[in-house]
Image (cartoon, rainbow, N blue to C red; front, side):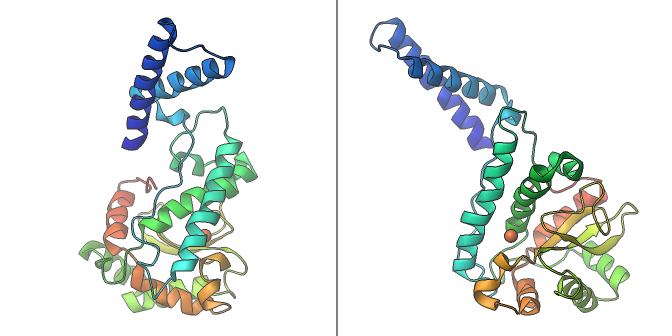
Length: 265
Ligand SMILES: [Fe+2]
């Protein structure tokens, strides 16, 4: 969020300079100029004061290059997925919340189903994809599960291999028909569970299908996540996806989830 704060400060400085010019007669203000100045001041002041909740959500940059997840996920898929699909979710939740306070995205999730389609589909989609980019890392760079997480996976599912098999089964087209996500969550009893959700729902949403909880790992099984490379072979995509999971991030989110904190993606 630091860049927003910086932009706010910069807007405030520019606004001050322009007003000085106006006062000194160097600039002849039009109504548009006045409106622009007012908006700049409001934005700048909010940024400097840390009132960032009123600002629109941003499409975050990927934390790696578009081709960094190859061969598991190809460059073209990453470009379309991030630059087009994710951008659309961000644009649409911003439209739905125009003029309203915009809290951190994670705070929209709990009531998203009750709040309506824009919050459920676009707010959910914006959050889920922020989460998705962060939980992946270039092949060989994602580390491994922490000892604590590895033990919890063994205790809950038998072994890492058993966990992966169950996760893959939950994401297979026969189990999650159509578009959706497969998740590893920390449930209300602090236990690990595998669940899946339709469309852009996620386990943070009240009333969600399946097991509610705090997600620490999620696989996007929409066709847009894999179709260019894998076509109808969704199971092959999920198998290859394990190679780009950022276990360091997932382990950190596991610790947070045990403390009741959801990823602030
Ligand atoms: Fe997606």
